[in-house]
Image (cartoon, rainbow, N blue to C red; front, side, top):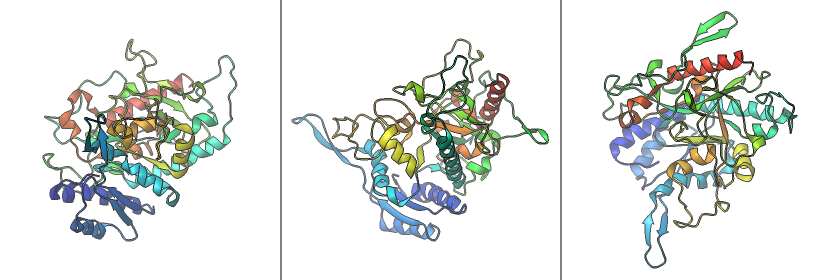
Length: 413
């Protein structure tokens, strides 16, 4: 977290942080907060934070946390504040406190991570672990064997619940969503015991924030309508679906998010029914796992202690937690060439590569749970910076995913 100026601190960062914590505490989660600040945290601001936090919420901080790095050669180099490396400093905090907590949530300072999202992550992680314990070590390699079901222990240990960050449209006229939707039908009908029922996403789950409007964005409703949530870092081309298991009450049909790819063993790959399988995108191929415009960055990550240990010690090709002795990095005082997105979690956690983890994010397609996988980017600034054609209504994407699910069911997958 980088604190820049009294107004931003009081009207943007502090309300988001307090909303995050209060929503988690309201769900009976025990919470402590640790801020990693790029600049000194003044005593008066520390006091404001402590006075606003709910009772029994612990608070610690690491201020002035931007590291120094020596760049260049022995004779022409220089010592600099290596600001890009601030994004990895939270890893040291988590490593230091690994034995003290069951769950770690690390996100950028403008991300509203509601307690619903944390609870969803915990519930699904427990179910994934239960399925892993019951799964076979290997599957028979018979001709015609359905590669979408079941899954092995090695596949399931790479699965984690995933999220998509959304913004709220603040000016439909000047900065609205895309007008030409990708050629996958939008279907909001779901079957239940009483027949078909129409379901939208539920913005109150992810995006009910009590805070002052961000500068220049106008009045943001406390609970925006479903059609006003937009996502800009993905579209329907990015997704595949699969039936994870018909024997689970909370995990049946799931969305497979982009990410895994390079240097992943063949028997660890997780197949699914791609949205373009029947030619909706003509001759376009399924995008690669690391396609940046479709990766759906989360603005951070969360993981249980057990998941972190397994990733760091077994699954990741480079250390996820310090010491980073498997990285083989030798430039910028061993900070390496990696960007902010790598260190903040998304690229290393979810994609393939020399130092990456190849974890497979999933989203529940159950309409009662889907909105728990949405995180609110409260800055609402991407819609001002990125073209309208990339602004996808989250509710449209939800309907398209439902159509792909029904198509996969019809094909017997």
